[in-house]
Amino acid sequence: MADSEGQDAGTTVSRPSAGRRDPYEVLGLSRDASEQQIKSTYRKLALKYHPDKNTGNPEAAEKFKEVAYSYGILSDPEKRRQYDNAGFDAVDLEGLDMELDLSNLGTVNTMFAALFSKLGVPIKTTISATVLEEALNGTVTIRPLPLGRAVNDKVEKQGAHFFGITISEAQAEAGVVIRVVSSVQSKFKLLYFEQEENGGLGLALQEDSVKTGKVTSAGFYFLHFQVYRLDPTVNALAIAKDPDAAFFKRLEGLQPCEMSELKAGTHIFAVYGDNFFKSASYTIEAICAESCLETAVKLKEVEAQILLKRNELRQFETEYREVLARFQAVTNKYTQEKQVVYKISQSLIAGFRFLM
Image (cartoon, one colour):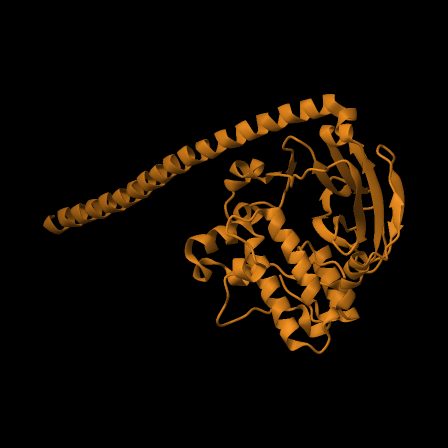
């Protein structure tokens, strides 16, 4: 993660070099903090120390960097595992993701970011401080979104449309899904806000849109059973380095969706325009799981089959790698023995010629 510091040159990752503090300490979290607790705490601290809100305050700027740096470790399951096991030395610090605030980038840097994104380079972007602050101050316009009714709209870049969704006790017990789709493949973020003590709204959940087929989509799943999504970017590097991994790792992209629980009442969601230069077209819909129970049952059956096959593939990969290693060792020995026999044969032939 990185902050842009409101300047064109601020798109590079800035990290504390010496005297690094424990990421858990920086975010004020216990070592068993959940993924959602990490996300929620980071968003609140990032907004508190954001350079836009602390102009001329170098101490806040350093706090912002430290918070972003710590989140870059704890938000990545692999980096978090490495840090938990062996501290900073085990973490690939150069591999920390960047998160850019497009509202603060100059035109040139925005154009470069857009170009890299179009070429397939994943670029994480953060929500503008203006949107977060307006939500926190309670000055946003909230439109009602009844369950089962889709709304089509277009949100300006780095802007947000807020929706209020009211659910009953029965609907909360059945579960609710919030889904946003863009048929023109716009980039956007789906956000969920919680009520703060001051009456404003604080960001609690965030989901970036991903390309699935001919659309981009994002969703929140407030269900009482686990659902999964297929992420094609998982293990992409391993697949690129090892052709066999394209087969064995194909199902590793099946990742559990972040699950939460909604209680009866009104809940606030927002669609954030994450495009670089233009507005984002989208369709948002809130669906009660009770209306699609048959589909949910079939989905769980398919997911169970995929998970079973993934475990079988993992075991088969281990067996395959072991046999392949033995085959390669035997093949290498065969080649070496062939060369030795050839040399001995040549020496023997040369000896006979000498005697003759």
